[in-house]
Image 1 (cartoon, helix red, strand yellow):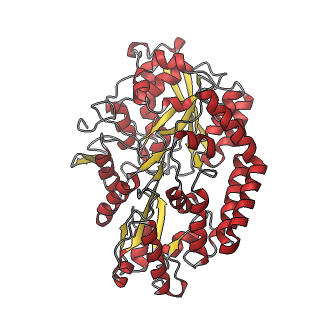
Image 2 (image 1 turned 60 degrees about the vertical axis):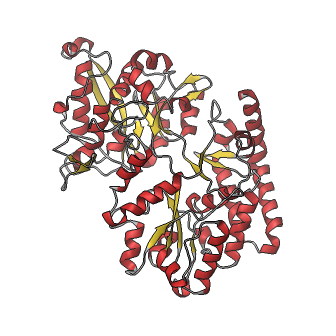
Image 3 (image 1 turned 180 degrees about the vertical axis):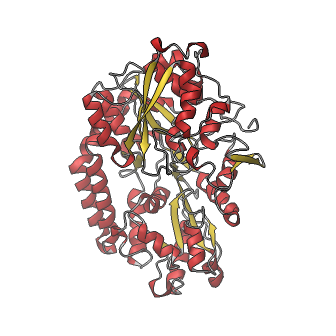
Length: 533
């Protein structure tokens, strides 16, 4: 693994790659991973000083037969390679993934939460910090986390609330957000090139519709009431790109930035209104929040343009592209950048380099041990083992990349690797090109070049959200649910209105959004921005 490199280090850096739920387990005592910083093996038998470190682990109900998320090969590996050398008993505490926040809220209120807890929900993390429920980890990181501090140098800042380091924030390696594919065989039938601008894409969608290339149920643009449908379109119309504009005229709902008051937002929604009124979108898109119908329309051959979360359309035999080819044997697709902005760029949103929030409750007495655990995990050899297992046993190196062995030899070790390897999200082989090459190896061989090109396209002209305020905003946390409801209501009403009534409908929906939550949220955003400056 010496050929793999960590960003910022000439070494291997692995970070879990799929949006996934990989693994727990292996007896792993022979892996040879270095003990945590400050550890001393001769103390491992000193039971008098031995302590217990309780660590959260997601329970997704997917454990192989004979193991659990709290007792498996990976938990044994953690105990033997971190716990025993440091005189620590590592006890994993299962938290149902589907009820994560509710369960943690109960445990935090009762003072019985594990010593190491984590969530992807920034609002929940800030709420616990605001209530005095979290430990400031700055001094513990300085003392016990040199490796961790270096490894997370780009993401640690996202865990600072009100000037205190209340969370260790895992790093996200893959920042690509959205990708698009189009039916190449449809373009061939029409003797049309792959569209490269918004106007060309519009003309192509009209041709798909006019020629009924998807049959009587032709839906040129597979579209749902979901961000991977509307964000690629709307962001291509946004004219303001300064951080100031994004602080003052957009809102954050969950982890997404919504440019609702930015110049160009209305035009983006109006373009979708035009597509809808010309029959280029699914007329029932408003009922499709889970994207099930959108995907069905595409894989059954009724749609020509498909936008999606990067990395999700290509894969194994059940992937979107594979299912299309199965259902429509003559179908073929090609990646594209369908929408361009006012400068002719394919500007699009990207993720920030921050993953889950890892925290220590204020009532815990194990903040030092918690940071030692995360620091141990940030080592190259530990990341390697927790991501792939042992070379020759669980994987072989092929062309410089780890390739899992056939069969179920790694199933019990790696089935929830992403929930165990919590300091990292994605796999970093030292360059964007190598990362794309590795990601492409996760899909069927015949689709690999398309998958790589798709990821390259999703990086082009991509713009990250500006660095967050020094704390989540109370108003955004308060109105998070209602803002999303009102924003989706704005989209549905505006897109489905007649073209003649668009302005009236859109303006009324904006007013409703502002009166319900927006005025308070934007006032707090302005105050926070001025204070930050």
